Length: 163
Image (cartoon, rainbow, N blue to C red; front, side):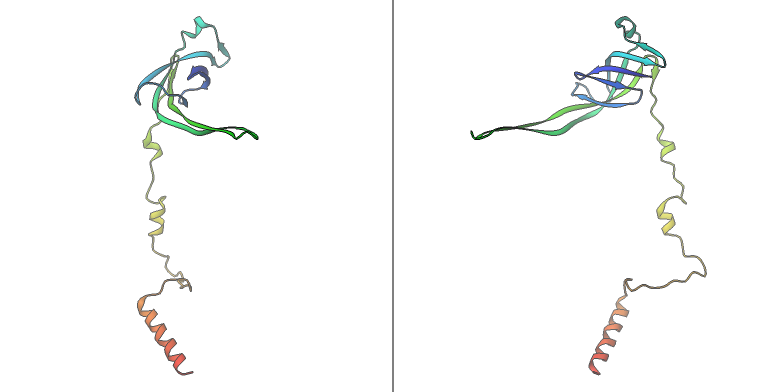
């Protein structure tokens, strides 16, 4: 099921749970806004008559306000020195479609998406001890301790002094 609604001077195709951005609307996040439906498609039933659309109210919840991308406008005329530069950013409001007719949207629960077990977390895998019998080797790039550094420099001095 979807609907074509008139919002912010444009027509938008929306389904339940969609988030759309329209021109700035009055209201705080969490407020409900009614959108005017132009067309409603429910399976194979298409409703477009004005009297029939009154039975299909579309409501949305204000998610928040934002600004659109920066648009630059440059007017230029050759050989006259005329150059005019303008720009703007649109003030937008994000809306989440909550209901179309009698169907309402339920937010997905966060408990299912945030479940992680100890064995699947990367930190738990890093903290595990190496397996028994596994060979551990030091690579040349490994950090040396201060004791080995002083021993190495002393052996270098001794080898260069003997030459």
